[in-house]
Length: 189
Image (cartoon, rainbow, N blue to C red; front, top):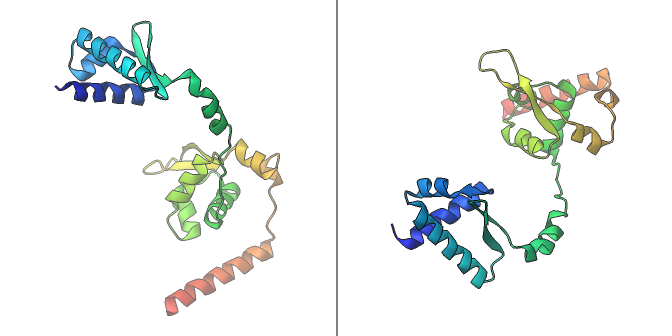
């Protein structure tokens, strides 16, 4: 194996693991003996130091870890403290409202109500921590059940699900009629 290939493998392992990896594990993963691995790692450590890179490899009690150089912490803190802005599109809000009012609910049930696939919107809501998996339905395939989270309550300023607005039954009938008319229009086209 070429030296550059061995260096690349060690870098990839240390980067991916994100924690200290013992020398013997690195040697086994790269099919090398420990002395060869140690020499390559020390060479990489010197290369990073000489090039004044933002990352470095450190040794911790016989294990090695790729991490950020201490001089870079200030820049990292600036970016890490900027909260991500989550955009709730109409599709996400529609999916979220279905989950909020019908929870616990499966994706199939959400898709039945919406009339379209909902994988992306449910996954985004999980990513935003507004929805989470709360179990599995006791049915064939054991589909995942979804419900809202405390973060949902916090973001929408409500103390409990009991505080969700109550939909007027007459409005529900109006929605049903509108939906049936839309379906009929699509069938006529």
